[in-house]
Length: 144
Image 1 (cartoon, rainbow, N blue to C red):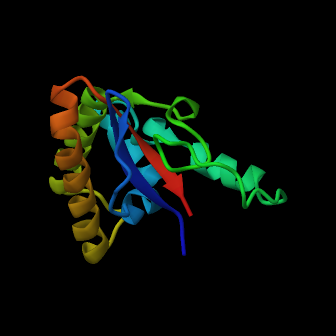
Image 2 (image 1 turned 90 degrees about the vertical axis):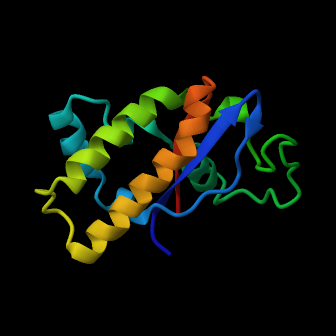
Image 3 (image 1 turned 120 degrees about the vertical axis):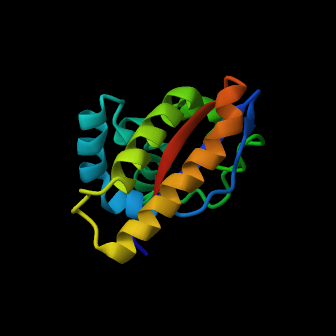
């Protein structure tokens, strides 16, 4: 399995645990960051939380099979261990990038990848619309 991004939201300590894979967004992260810069919005890569990856790499040599899971996240780490960003700011970036990619000129992806990328961007926009309106937080989690 390759690397992918998941999108999670946080509202009043309610942590969303489900996400679709956003593999095209990860695969084309550098090109999407270039689009972000050109559009004058925050880079999508700046919204990535590396907690899961760091925890799993740090834990490779440990034998913590019996470790307790955090009750809020059902993970070995908690909400306060993660990096969170304003959902409204992420939504601004996602909408600007999606519009620019859809307008053409995104040569980093072939037609099939481009369709998948637009679907992934649409999914992230859909996920963030409600939380952004309510002042919630979000992040992209890098997972393997």
